[in-house]
Image 1: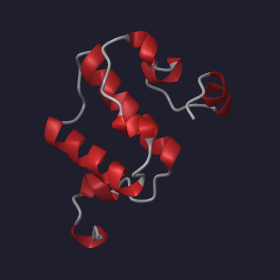
Image 2: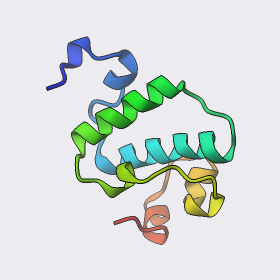
Image 3: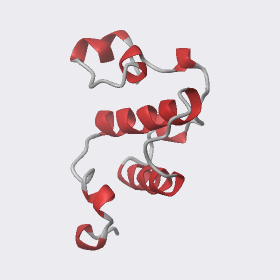
Length: 95
């Protein structure tokens, strides 16, 4: 069990995040790392975030996927580094 009070601040910031937001965070950081070559967080912080989201969402297939260096593997809103509108997710459906 993870304790909020002792978790690092960057984990606390995502404590209440739902599945779709967790996917967006992971995919955005993968895109920045693998495609853009401009990671915004350290590898260690990314690994902690991924571990935390796996803990929260143990059966999610996005979290089990390997990062891709192909832009086409990322939704346009991820490539544009913007928050998705509901229509974005409808057009780029991830079950």
